[in-house]
Image (tube, rainbow, N blue to C red; front, side, top):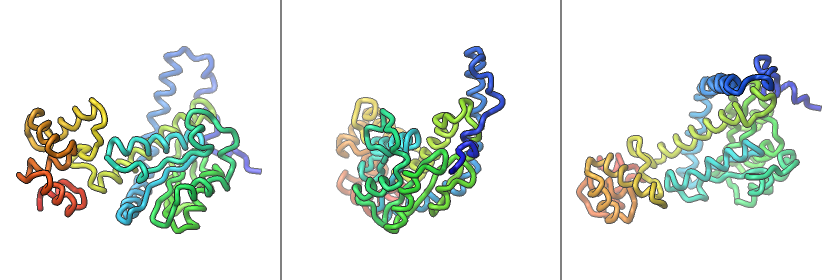
Length: 298
């Protein structure tokens, strides 16, 4: 039987054995100091993260989707990142999907035993019609969660792309993935509580993957989120500021451009920078595959 104690994410940190006797400020400083090790650990895996980004961008070129799959904290992190992509980058919710063991209920309440069901992952992925154009990103701090491994195996069986993200070296699930991302976060301040450093590391990796994929998919101009969905007051204000920053006009003129562009920042920017109307701007963007810089240059 596998000994979970062999995992570094389950090991005891000798510097925190007195955690329960520490004054609150010392406890918090100890946690904060531990967290400073996470970003450097992620940096070690940038070559593998870059490969994952390139694989997903290629998949998107043939209408492939990006699917996060995980259990517990890892699953919730994937669902969170997927849910942020439509408002931030204007993608259809079906383009970036988050699947958690135990279903939607598990987002807010633990579903006991769901992570151990290796066969359920195949059922859940079949339910969203996973195919060879898609890429599955399986998240598991331990690197050996049966549900995550089952997701990778099912994705491979249909010819899809596979990426694993774990927080242990030599993770079991790495052998089931086309691209293995291993972040060595070490023992947790609270022994075995992988919602801490391991959770932070997985969130950082998801941030990097989704943002870089969208940058490389034409969803960004400079460092501006020009494809955002202005669905509330804050985002409508942001859209005006984005158009203003990108074109040099004031926010009143930016608002007028957005009105003429049907609220679409990209179209408004291309209209201003090229002197064309909304229909022509949309054609330029279509011919440029959605890249503002290319549309403006052409």
